[in-house]
Length: 266
Ligand SMILES: NC(=O)c1ccc[n+]([C@@H]2O[C@H](COP(=O)([O-])OP(=O)(O)OC[C@H]3O[C@@H](n4cnc5c(N)ncnc54)[C@H](O)[C@@H]3O)[C@@H](O)[C@H]2O)c1
Image 1 (cartoon, rainbow, N blue to C red):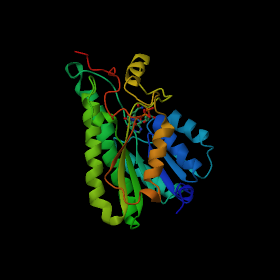
Image 2 (cartoon, rainbow, N blue to C red; image 1 turned 90 degrees about the vertical axis):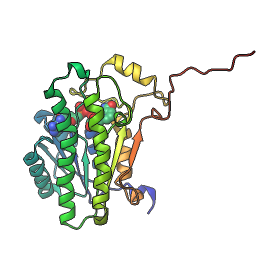
Image 3 (cartoon, protein in one colour; image 1 turned 60 degrees about the vertical axis):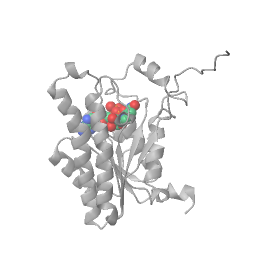
Image 4 (cartoon, rainbow, N blue to C red; image 1 turned 180 degrees about the vertical axis):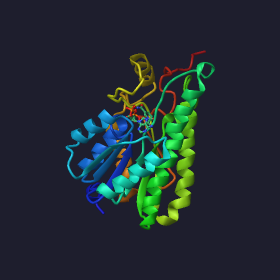
């Protein structure tokens, strides 16, 4: 199959959680542009309506308020999406939250909110999507969205970094369990991605500092992540499963912020 043909998703149905904004919307938009029908789920009602409108509405877009932390909500969303625009062939477990609080100041409610959204939410989404795919004997593609934070800690991110490390290992185990059904399960680990979103807590100071560690010299965009997700869901990635793809402008290559050092003459 030629490369352009591999990125034609006509006839596919891509379900994206947290799809009303940021990276999730970028992924949904990319699949829609590539010919897929899309199902967007998000906890924010107004944002869901806006996102559906931005995609032009119509029969190829299903958008609904849902909460990835809630088993019934996830199962109902996947069932309704399957009935409205299905059968679902692609599932992207993207919804996530990233507050920053040092451990000594963190209350249990914040810890639980991060774990419930980022870990339980990924489990519930992937389980529901995989069950729908398996009921039809596959095949299918599932992508989870982790973070560079799964591999490199940061102050204030004890809950977030732990949750993303859990997403990585969840992806690997699920991939093994359903490989025989020809369902690929892979993970994208974004670096810093600039999102135009009401929910993102990132400050200008944080952005300026983090960009010092990005050799490519710019923040990532939702489109950069969508490109990797489309590749993993394309026939070109048929033999990849249980894998983590970092998309971060080289940020995990090393310590780019260090100055060049030259040996002293003796
Ligand atoms: N932006 C980055 O730099 C970056 C870097 C690495 C990883 N990520 C990950 O990418 C994913 C998307 O991040 P983003 O930057 O686009 O965030 P964002 O805040 O812009 O968008 C996240 C979306 O998820 C939705 N959401 C939150 N909780 C939900 C729930 N319980 N149920 C359903 N939807 C819910 C929000 O309403 C929002 O629309 C997250 O998993 C995040 O951890 C982001």
